[in-house]
Length: 404
Image (cartoon, rainbow, N blue to C red):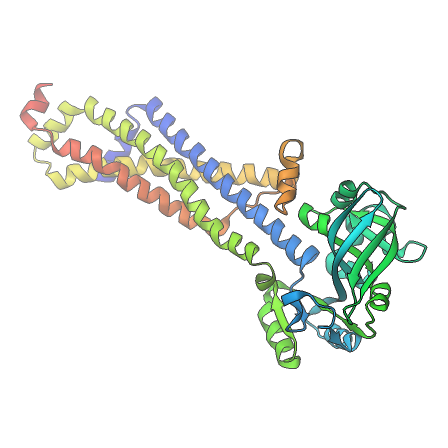
């Protein structure tokens, strides 16, 4: 009886109720859309980190990542690569020879990481050829080809076909300089990475660094993200002399970003619902003010404080929950539309997004797993919003209320 009476009371002033229900629905749309946008950005960033940058797993000599010295290499690299490639949970493997040195041209210089790869293997792991915007990559004709990032090319003012000199140390700590010709320019979603990473053929770099059947890094891409823990355990057991790290260890900032996004989402939707709560409180106070005489009569006829409290409580809760289904449906429609078409922000913040490793084309995803949390926040908002109006209703004196 209390619930049905509360529902009828809501619609005694249809315009006011529709306005507050619409406000709640639009507030939910805004909150859920932002959550979906965060989820889409993180999914895209995670895919970029795993499938274009660090891969699922990497194998190194335990001492290599301390100072990146050439002497700390993985011996018999190709044998290890073939054994790992034969595992059923492995999709692709790439052996990388790595050196840190200086890139110099007649127009400028820059510190770079030189990565020696076998082009076909590297493409399967990091989609290197898909990132090319100019040239043929490492398959180009000529001696000592090199592929550089567009941001680096702009920085040192070189273009396709330009010559440059790389200077680094070999495994015997001798300084080595060699001339290379630019046969490809690539551009990824991560501008800082483009500025410092260059690719050469592993055969060329190994020859210059006095490495034979060796490399410094083996990148492993798995068939499924769910196989990460098992794959790491198996490889660690097989190669105890090597350091085997997963993408979370290799890119801790990405892991931290994923872990903190839920907190940001809760804070954002909480702020929206807090603002809406004041609107709900204002609406209920107006309703109580208009029905002061009616409430006084109900109390005079025997309605106790508990029933009066529940009446106002249910009015507030029903008013709030009435907007929730519309908000959920509308937010799903909006997110699904932009999930297909994308949101292009390259015209006003593309460079900034690229600086943090994000794509300038955003695809929001509906946050199904967070909807129960959203509904919980909506429910808490409704309960909190009902407290003050209920308190005001209970403070009414029946005789004085009936005189108004």
